[in-house]
Length: 178
Image (cartoon, rainbow, N blue to C red; front, side, top):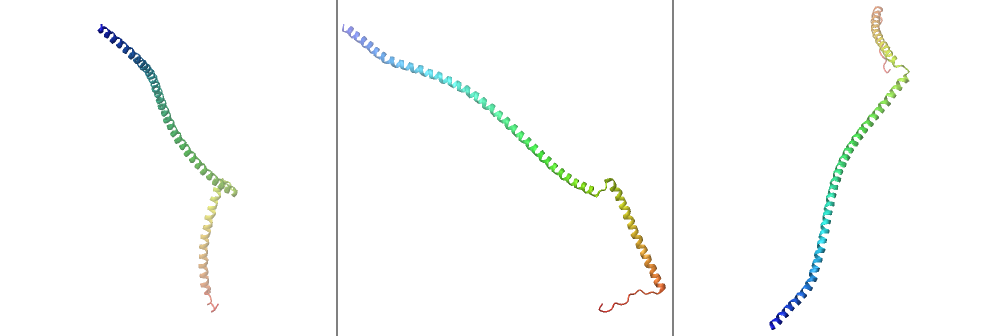
């Protein structure tokens, strides 16, 4: 009987120890299970947030790429427009220079025209008058040549006449002191 009692005591002790350990482990197991559930929930939420963040990252990357392409296109258009504007400015500068030169020529031509109008001679008559002037000038030169020939002839004839008449044309000597 003692063995029975010992066996009963041993069974009771093991039941008691089982109960005590079950109660203590039950709290820990419940705590671990709740921690596990909480960790799983956080893991699920974190994975969901990670998936969402990756999705947003992909969208943002795509948006950045699209924006970069648009920026590159805009920069290219800006460079093209700047180049065009420079070309237009160069053309405008050349046109302004040509305009100023043309205005200067116009002013000079207007002055020349005013000078012609001040002469009060029609343009058609200028050529005729110029030809008349050339004719008169040629006639004048011919008259001068003829006058020179006649003057030599007169001097020659006068010399002969003086020889015939015996006239000496040597001038008297100059008086001293005069």
